[in-house]
Length: 155
Image (cartoon, rainbow, N blue to C red; front, side, top):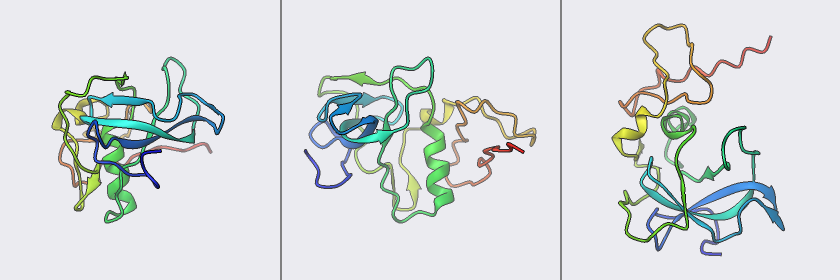
């Protein structure tokens, strides 16, 4: 294993830890498998298991470590929501792709490229929270907590 605990800067040499579906000995991807995620411009490496099963119609599920120790739950959730969804991932990528090195959430902010905010179709202007749950990307203002409508109204 590359890291003793979840970590990484997102470079080819020091990719960020991801977890994949399955469990030790029966993981969806072999430990050490690298992916490149253009939406966050980071390389990631499979170092853990226990991620949820992939959603129907997708190839896999990657749970990425984002750091975030200096952020509130709201701030880190908002950050994750800007790039969570159905995103491209390149397996066994070349080592020369563009990288925005460093933890995803550090220094109190979400460190992802601006275009990552456009993944979702979620728009908060109507206030009715009608979003498609698959793609609840927030806006590109980074620090706002107005994009936190995750309707889990089962009752």
